[in-house]
Length: 280
Image 1 (spheres, rainbow, N blue to C red):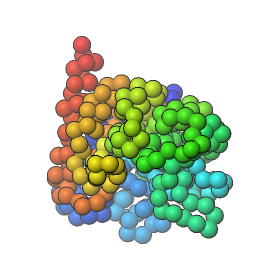
Image 2: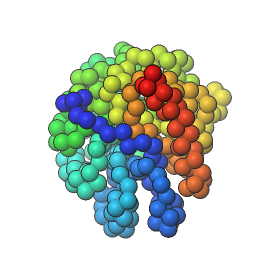
Image 3: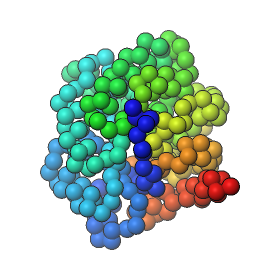
């Protein structure tokens, strides 16, 4: 079972983005690890060559955007075989994707779309997620989405739905605390309601990111520094996971690699609080 496997704490990482590759290759900075978008490297070519260079120096974790676990379409076995081949190359200690859907046969929406939060949908997604994990033969995690609206047919809250899926499937959680905050603003709940009622022992990784705040609503854009409210959620959640790998996502309006890494390293002060707590 996923929960019985030893999950390493890789430290603090950042998303591997092509804009930073020249500086990485020139300086090989002391970054703990990188996360890659799995689909960017599944076709080979120059991206895979660059990844192989990265793998010589850093641990790499795979994070997908195209599994579409909630789609009504059956699992794409060609895609899963490619994913498994890449996972074997990278030796990723776990693999994650999103609790969402984004394509159907003949139509790809290039987005991470939310699912109706019903018991039948939770059972359906859990069954597919269990199959994915069994096939990949490594721990599989689903990430919570940033939500903008509820469905009229919803039968449970966001945190209840996430918990239902991962518990039924016996898989892990990739907890995005920025998404948690964005959802809380858009849907009007207290973030503490969320993170105190999910199985935090299943969290294998935490995402941090910035967003765009338009007052009446918030969009998950990954193009700003992490806001104070998200850092506070991280401070509350991180000790309860007993220390898991943390990653900063920055995907648009890029800043220099050094500044990106400095932003990620802000997590160290909160992690130190956890180490002090464990010592006492």
